[in-house]
Image (cartoon, rainbow, N blue to C red; front, top):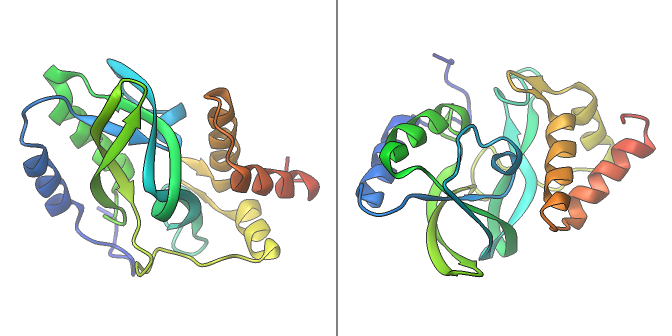
Length: 199
C-alpha cells in the first residue's frame, strides 16, 4: 500500500460508486484519450473513434507513482473541463467487464486522483456513454501552465513504476497520430523535448 500523498483519495469508494452507476447491465465503455489508446491492458471487443465535448486532454496531472515519485513528481494526461477531445471508445468484454475494470483501477487510480465520470461520446455509430478519467482544476494534483524549463526538468528527471514521463508523452503523441488525431499541444511538447536533446 502506498503512503498517503497530498493529492490522494481512497480509490475503493470511487470504484464502488462507479460500479453502482454502471449497474452491471449493458456494455461498459471506456473513453481512451492517453495511454489507454496504446496500452489498454485488455482486449476491447469493440473500438470506435470518439469525441467528447466540454473536456480537453492536457498534460497537467501530477504523477507521484506511475510516472514520477513523491520526490520528483512526473506528469500524466487528464481530461479537464473546456473544449473537446478526440480519442477512442473501447468496450470491455461483457463476461469480464467488472473484473477488467477492477484490474484497470489498480493502474489508473493508485491514489484516487482522477475523478471518474460517465461522459457522452460521439462516435460514427452514434452516441454512447463511456467512463472517463477526469481531473478537477481545484485538485491538488492539477498543475497550472508550466514554463518550458519546468517542463523540461520534469521530462529529464521524472520516472515512476511505469517509466518516464518523457516516454509516456512521446508514446501517446505517436499513438494519437496513428489514430489520425492531431494534438498540437502534445506535438509542441514533443518538439520541445527534441529541440533540447531529450530525444
